[in-house]
Length: 323
Image 1: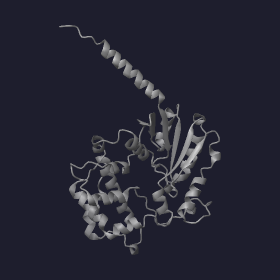
Image 2: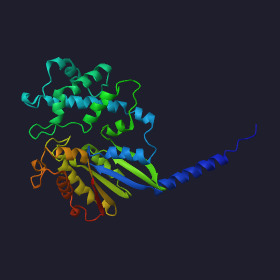
Image 3: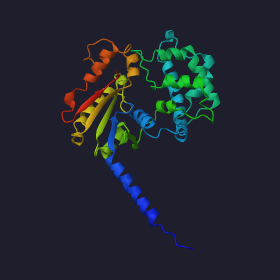
């Protein structure tokens, strides 16, 4: 047989490799930073969905476990909170729901939804005691910390059989899910012939030591702050306010020598949760310097003002908050 000439195919591979390397070198690097649960990973997923290749069916299938965990965690935290309030508030779960309560409470973070457990959670969520507990989640005296997407997943379970083997998470199910980011995640996409590399890193304290690996050649830094967390404590330190932690972290990052010539965007996130919470939980409870009312716009202005331009004298900065 005649010898096979691989020269053309090798040259094609080299050319493709060079083109890919050139594309990577020309990509604008966007780094997402912020404290844990500020919404970085959700923004990351949204940008992939809108500008990248999207989240295909196979990838969405892989989020099934995370969705189940969110449903279970949401109900467990609700059940735990029911006993926080005086009996007169109507939040105590009646004896008739004892079996459902105990079954859900006994689940671990390794468990998946079964038909029985899913029905228990549906029944519990519809009961007035759980509805009242959710309604009082922002009570000043009895603090209740629930996942941001608690209502979404409870209502999603009412309308869909999330426990079925055939269930495939929707795009919205994936965006709403919460998995703590560990390590560094990257994705590439193009907008109007401009290539971008977006980098997401874990925001928990244990993950922050890895951030420096991503600090080289950053074109834009997006620092995210969950404004709804002004009254919440850190996951790793129950004495440390989340907003003040974000404030200190931002000051440190914005003044870093790594970002002298980097454009910094300060993104105030979770405004939808903030505007509901601020009606019941005064900002002054954790920020005594705030002298304003419970008006959401006034509160948002204050939240932006605690990150003054003097924090980043070296870098151009843009603040972004909902209109």
